[in-house]
Image (cartoon, rainbow, N blue to C red; front, side, top):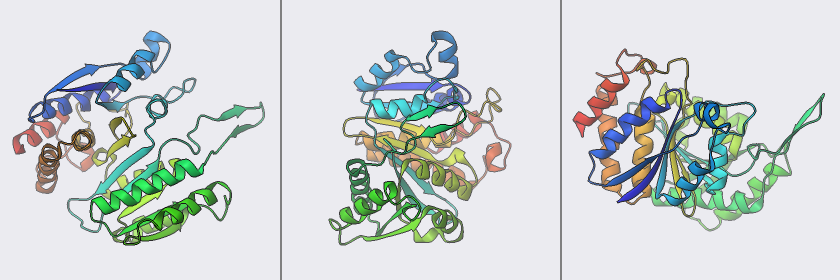
Length: 323
């Protein structure tokens, strides 16, 4: 039996978590789901958006499922803190269209440093954020990107950076990328500046297999990937470390539609399939992914973000039918 910490959070987090757990219950795996709190509602109750009890549960679990939380300006990001506490240095975001074969690539985002290091200072009339980039973190994320490409049979890994303007920090990342590429001579390595990459994702996405980049750039590019697919509600995310994994949809808490049964649960459901892969349940993961693909391709059931009028529950029920 797998011990899974679930953090529904707030906003639409609870609405996409519930059907996801229902779908996981249809698999051959046995789960012990342990619900813990984080986010805005948690902050109102306890004065913190991420209690130590939640962190401890994640550390002791086989994996964590994370819904969505609303940001609180006076608190550090709950999800960024969890990534640091669990040393989840890999953020893997597959961008795959079921109707356009030209859109099928994975963004591998460095998850532990960069501008998301919580190194900010307020000096009154000005504020400063420190962008930390190290050889250690850069090399291990690049090594993962190449090994992942090899594992899934892809031919190319593309790095994205801004080393022409940030020669010290992104220079470290670019140098690390090409050093690691020598370990994988069978895989083509190339790179683009981040602004050019943003353009090429729109004009020629078919050229990309695996993209590896720094923290902030990866966050931005994956949302652009959502634009290619038509909705952030279709993109799952895996946060992976040496010992633990946390799986979440790319989308946020969307408080404007919370409680209306409009949220698209697909990103959360696909995130759970990535969790199954992490737990070495590849066949069960593939069943869920195939069911989602069938529903999306048929196009009979579509939530509002996909141009339809179906509900969260209707989407979930249709996916369960396909299973």
